Length: 167
Image (cartoon, rainbow, N blue to C red):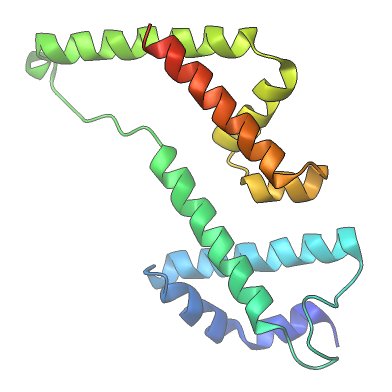
């Protein structure tokens, strides 16, 4: 029997597990569907099922739980990164608000300029993690670069950007 069929038999269980993270049913269903896709892609790349299966008929619940939790954290991280601009009428725009927007624009220019001046590796790692939404662990697994090397690179880039903004 195929692994995805075995996973599908426990669909209600996976949805309930995901809902235990605090999600509504629709969002939990989305994450479970993402889990199926992620495991399918992982199986195609790695062609081994030792991690996913306890034996020929039983799915490794811990592996599935960790996958669901990682997808939940990734979705939450992406949602927190989304810019939320308050809706305001033109007459409600105070002078302070306009100055804040200008400061933000100036800081974004400084950040872009600082990133352009960085070594290509640092810039690419930062882009993958902060702009494209990859986790450092995913990047480490795919690239073969040590997790701590990626972590140190991100910390170095953050420190450089903070120095640029605080000038």
